[in-house]
Amino acid sequence: MPHKKITRDHLLTLVIIILTIAIGAVTFFLLPAATDEARQLHYRPLPFPRWRTQQNRPLALPTPSTIAVWMTFDYLNKIFNLPPDYLKTSLNITDARYPFLTVNGLAREQKQNATGTLKMVEQAISNHLNGK
Amino acid sequence: MDQLLAPLFSFLLLYKYVALFIIIFVGNIIFLIPSNIFILMAGVFSGTAYFNFYWSLLIIVIGNSAGDYLIYTLTKKNSAWLGCRLRNKKAPYFQRLENFMKSAAGRTIIISRVTGAFSIIVNFLAGISKISWWKFLFYDVVGNFLVTLILMYIGFVVGGTWEQASDTVNTVGSIVGVLMLAFFVYKAVANNKK
Image 1: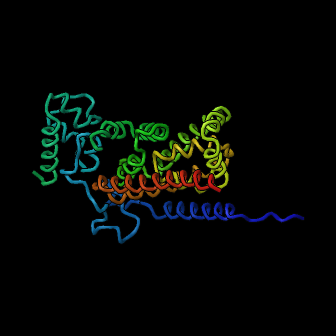
Image 2: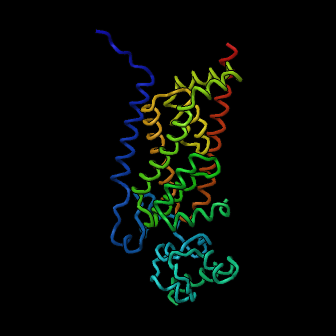
Image 3: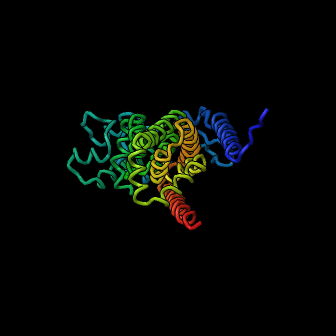
């Protein structure tokens, strides 16, 4: 009975399959099963302890200074854990698309400069985070 | 970069997974959209629980593979015409590349997935070289899965500092892409001298 020769391509395919299954399994089992605190903060804990901060959050937390004009208010509400209508009230937003409205969209709607609007949003978020 | 991609980032936040699929799919067909950055962003959004990590991973792999498969299918269907035109013009060089692609399809397809936009060239070569459907699909899905997982994970970890990470991802992708192109040229020319 003729034996099929095992070529380098066969071995490579086998290595790739094993690697894929291993990485898939590690991802599936170690990636976030969020803790209660993380769920409450809308953050998922990082998979490996050495990558966690003491607060169990990603290394680079979003801060008001990292927000951008392309972000939607829905996203901002989520990442800063803001009450749904907080920004709507504090920035006097009347656009019906809120919270599915970008900072840029708000600037256009209010006929203002995008940078100026961004500063206002940053300030409003900072005020909330500082408990003002 | 951020300024140019800003409307697409907004699109992604507004329409979530539908936008993710469209951006990744289109990005794999045309050079202009750096799909690796959007994979990284999906990881960033997963880190803030705005996107689901596993759904994003699945959608990106499907979008990527669908885009790759479209290019591959189109070139394979027209390989007789395309191959004839190319062989007539650059006969020995093209023939060498075609032979190389046939002998090292798996490795080439998997490595090329790291390069983002450059992978279109490999999809094109795979189609013209008439690599089998299943072989292409297998290596393409595996390559896309591994690269997507790594990029999403980086995005997941770096969170708010994604811009620096995207520069690194772009640089690595470009270096691998250029090395790959140089290797193709070397293969075509070096074999030709034998």
